[in-house]
Length: 194
Image (cartoon, rainbow, N blue to C red):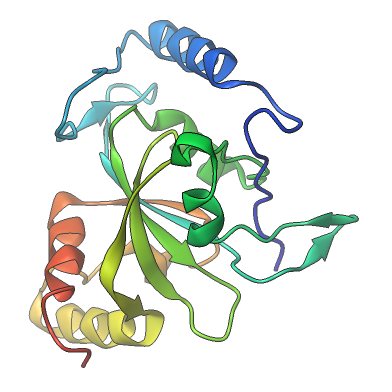
């Protein structure tokens, strides 16, 4: 399954100013504005789909191991993000139209989980802010297998992960999360793996 390719800012793609201008133009055309400098994410944001609420929390998948796609190595791990100047990188190469739309719906300062995919142990490894900037490593690795157990349990009992996009639309590399899902996953850092 092809995964998104990441391009580093300043390497071959637009610089941070160009990205910022591009995002501002997009947001202005949708009659929304980013809250720059806000330390807490917005609870909901407005999309161009008739004012529907879109999540302010996200899960973004990337491959931590080398794999060539059309001669380009698509590897980009959380360690690669941490190693970037100012710990900021451009997130590109997303081809799925729905994932691209989610990427366009994101606002500055919104939080996202960094998810390692297509590897021996897929799972959530850290936090970042959109556009993407490293925030911190997770206190512990939260595996896909562990999330699956909670998802199955919550489907039966009505818990927060009952309809998590990670399990209903697995192939999306950029996925929205509800605040309830985001908070529940963050709380798992403080518990022992199940």
